[in-house]
Structures are given as structure tokens and as C-alpha cells.
View 1 (cartoon, rainbow over the protein chains, first blue to last red):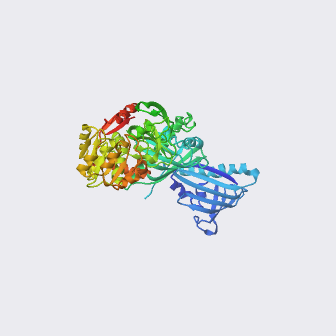
View 2 (cartoon, rainbow over the protein chains, first blue to last red):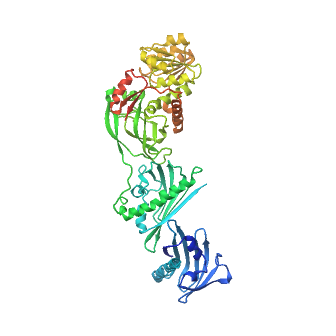
View 3 (cartoon, rainbow over the protein chains, first blue to last red):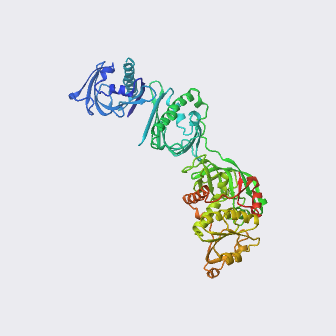
Length: 146
Length: 487
């Protein structure tokens, strides 16, 4: 089992950031790497168990299932059902924590997964820096523009 | 209702560097402005789960906190307040560090729950949030910016309390007052269940004379330090001690001799806190002696209205307390003293009929004037053996408290039956075997002194270095009231 952990500080309150990222279907609104997204079977995007079906800008198709959503903890957990990345048993958590001094929040994005041994290094890099840090950069830009 | 305080910040330093400071449970006096002094109690280390740190804050408040959880993998530390002079009750706090991988910084989350007295919720919440947590964030930032963590203080071994030097009066061979000699020693840091006390006043008792003479070698082998009681200030306390904080004024009654010194480590169960109304000297003069009077009058003598009570050495440390208290209980107090001066003082303390006698002759007067004594408090011993017997009324109670004139020879039980006499030979320590019973009896003595029921005895003061001179005075039978040594 491989673990990837990335964290950052976003210059907006946890409430503000959470109102964006809690929408399991909302990635295209803030993440420029995502081309489109829909929730399968017309379900609500905050229904635990729903599946988002989206494409990245480079054409990859990914299906992910929402496993947990907490407005109390500002956290969500999801797993990958289908993707071109070559990972198995992939479960990721995105969590926000308020930073009480200043309107900032501490954001953590982590994942555990299995993969072919020779691809470990590459996937840790891609997921940690590309997906998660890329997501944080997108959030920082998104809230920095306001 | 539980209060919850959460504060968090981002520190511009890698998590390992921040954690190296915060994981040390004893580091706060190096970086947090609110803390004046911090010490790990006993011999524990600052990273030992279960250890207790003792804080003195700059505002004078004192706090003892116990480490409940320490995780180097989670970078988290949980601790609770064991005791404090600020009313934070059931206070449990958790401090957690998390790496900010984006920029190699550290997210610091600090939270606690606690209860407060009604009406003080907001004040105490703000105190914890602002003065402790937010100030702590700023202070740690400054500490790291100034390189305070790199000067080696936090990296060296955790400081634990050192042994403290103590001055003593030591007996190297049994004998007269001159065998009490000044000496130096060390008071070790308190182990679990112990308290270390910086002593200011030490009670002198006749028992100390017996110890010095070698009458009870099992209780004080050589070389030995006499003294059963003292008054002072708590320096520090060991693990598992509750109800006592550094700085508290206390008195103790030792399980073993050793009180003739300036700093001593003793079991917490023989220590009680002093009320503000009782100063150090008075406490040292009336602790063991007052407890003795309490058990003599209340438990053994059952002294009340009309009780005819005969007290020997009525102007002595115990004698005056017994006279004063028994009088308030309605007893007719008869006393023996060795001089007219003492008779005058004994009378002032409630003894209606002091008998001046150098040779322990009193039975005729007690019988002719009062028809005998219901209770005799006897500190004389063998020298007054026959007179005591003659002075007792039918069904009288002879309480043998001491033997200043020499060891009391065995008493034939058939002699007791002639007047249905009961005989008691109490050891005070059996009446204060638990901390609760000690505190209860001491509380009664000090309440009675504070409200005037019990008249404070005259106090004769000697320095610790002159303990031999104090003993010589006590044995000269010329003293009135209680003797104490000043450390």
C-alpha cells in the first residue's frame, strides 16, 4: 500500500473553500485540469455513494465513488472505480481545517493505493504533485482572484 | 457545560524543527512568555508519558499538568491539568502538528475542553485562547526566529529537579544536649507520593529528647536527626500527589524523625496545608502538641463539663493547650508546675488550681480539694507514679503521655482494680495514621486557635544551629509554653 500526502494553506476561510469543494460534481468550476463532470444516474452530488464521471483536459476518463462526506469535519473520502492511471484500491481524502489566526485554512489531500512496484515513484509524483498540489494551486488561484 | 477552545496557525518552519521544541513537555519556560518556571516532578523525563510538569506562571499562578499522550509519528501531545490555582476543571488539551508539504511549513492545531465556575466561562476561554495559545504561537515563532531552539537547551537531557542542600542538627552519639551538632546534607527530589518542603519552623517536643538520649534507638538509629514536625513551603511534589502545590504553606508530622533540618522530603500523607490565620511559628508550636491535646481531651479523657482534670507540666507546650481547651469544655483543670511564674501563666490559660511542686507532691491537695481527679495527663513518668495513683478518683483514667523523670516501671493490673482505674499509653501517631485523620485533627486545633477557643501558647524560639541549647532549655524545666527552632 502506497500513501501520498500533500497539504497546503489556502487564503480563504474553511467555510468558503468547503462550499466549493464539497460539491462532488463541481471540479470543473475551480480546477482547470478538469474538462467536464457529471453524476451518474442523476443522483445528487452530496449523496454518499454517488459516482462522478469526469474527463481530464488530456482526455482521460475517471469514475470515482463518494465514500464519505462530512460538513462537520470539512472532509470527503472517495475511491477510484475506473481510471487510466493504473492504480488499484485507491482511496483518497480531502480535508480542510480552519486556521484560527487569519482567514485561512489548512488543506490536506491524501491517498492510499496499490500499483505495480516499478510505477510507485512515478505515481507518487503524479498524484502528489500533479493531482493534489495541482488542485491546491487551482484553489489558491480560484480564491486569490476574488 | 464544557468549554472548548481551538486555536491554530501556520509556522514557517519544517515540522521536525517545531516538533523538537513542542515534544519536550518541559520546554515552555524557554519560549512561552507566560511561563516563569517549569519543572518535571520527581525523577521523570519530559518525554515520559505520565510525567507531571509543574509551572509557575509570571502572574503567580501555579499549574501542574500531566502528559497523557505523546506521539512522534502523529506529532501530537495530549495533557491534562492535575491541579491549578486557576479554576480550569477537567482541562484536557491536545496539540497537533501537521506538515504543510506546500512550502515545508507546519500547521499547528491546539485545542482543549474544560469546565469553569459559573459566570467565568468567557473570561477563562479568552485566557486560554489568547494568553496561552495565541501568545504561544507568537512566542514560538520568535523563539525559532531567534534560533532559541538551536542553542542546545531543548536538545540536551531534560532537566529534572536536583537534590537541594539542607542544614541539619545531627546526633552522632546518644547523650546530652551537646551531642546535637550542626551538619550538612541533601534533600532528594520527591519520589512518587512525596513532597519536598523548605522548612521555616520546627516544633521541639520531649520525644526529641528521648531520641537524642537513645531511649528509642529503633526509631532513631545513629547517626540520626531528631524532630517529628515542621512547617514550611512546598518546593515540589512527586508523582501521584494531589492537594499540594509548590508554594503552599504546609505542616507535617513525620512517620520518622528527621525534622531538625532546613529542607526535607517527606511522604505527602503526613502533610497538611496551613490556614492563612495560622502563622508559621504558631503552627510549629501547636501542630503535634495541639493534636496531642485533641486526642487527650476528645478521645481518651472524654473531657466535658465537670470533669476533674489533672495536668502535669501545666505550663509546658502541651500543658497550656490542654488547660486552655479543657477549661473551654467545662472541665475543672488542676495542674502541677515547678515555679510560681509557671503557676501564674497556667492560671491565665484556665488552670483553676496550679500546684507548685518541685518533687511531684500533689495527691493530698487533689484529694482534699477536689475529691480526686477523673483524668490525669501524665508526662512525668516514674517520679510521680505513686502520687498519680493516689490522686486518681474512683473510675479515674490515667493517661501516660511521657516520662520526663524516667521510664515508668510496670504497673500491676491488680493495683488498678482497687479504684477501677483505667490506664492508657497513647502514641499520637496511631491517632493520625491517615492523611484525612491528620487533617481533621489539625483542622480542629487551628479552628480553635483562630476563633479564640484555644489560647495560643507563649513561644520560645531558637535557631536550628542552636538545637542543643533548645534541648538544654526544655530539660531545665524553666521554659513556659512551646519551643520551636527556626530553620
